[in-house]
Image (tube, rainbow, N blue to C red):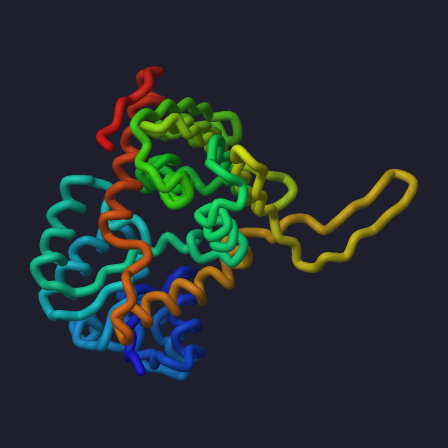
Length: 327
């Protein structure tokens, strides 16, 4: 039984705390958040307690779901205490800061898992396993689509690090996960087509990225902050002997047919619903890494690599030029 403390009582902290409370191999050690009312409400909902920040680092493990600027500091505090860490992405918006943080984790010798939950989505994980098993031969072209149902407020955009670091970083991690090779070249383009306030804040809300590996494999990523039909999350892998595809999820599989054709329900509304199973599966993986010594499946180095790709995409979109990457 692993006692896990949760730092952060916001929307991501809430889903993690409830999953820990329901897990047969975990116990929720407590909730820490400077918003006392939020912490008390979540603790009560999970039959747990509110704890001070220092107590969170003294638990059997700590899950960090607090705002991004706190992540690296909290990881280092946990590492200094010898406490295994699960941290939501990103570790930090600065690659230099991430490197310093990962060095501290390595010196402490504690497990660190980064919350790239999409790796654990049942459909995406099955696609990766079948791709790695050679079911479609050699991978040639990978297409990743990720479109939010509506844009975030401009106030969020201003402190998010931009679309490539905030939103596309998940897709860049999935690209690495599925390509099984490090990209060596990246080209990005972006526009503000959804909300003028996002453009005024210096960001984009519509973007595409193309990645190329040393062997010539290609990946195209499509992002938008608007999808009128729900949360659009799809992956397609094209290989020398076939194709693998993972599509959107709807609340039910009921279809309606009439003279105008077939209709289905919209895609699930947003990430909390779409990746509900993935959040549970990544918690399983983290607990397994701590209690059973299983390899960490989304490491701090994975977090750094994805951030470096996001940085390169930001630069490419700014300059209009391809960026050559270190493999």
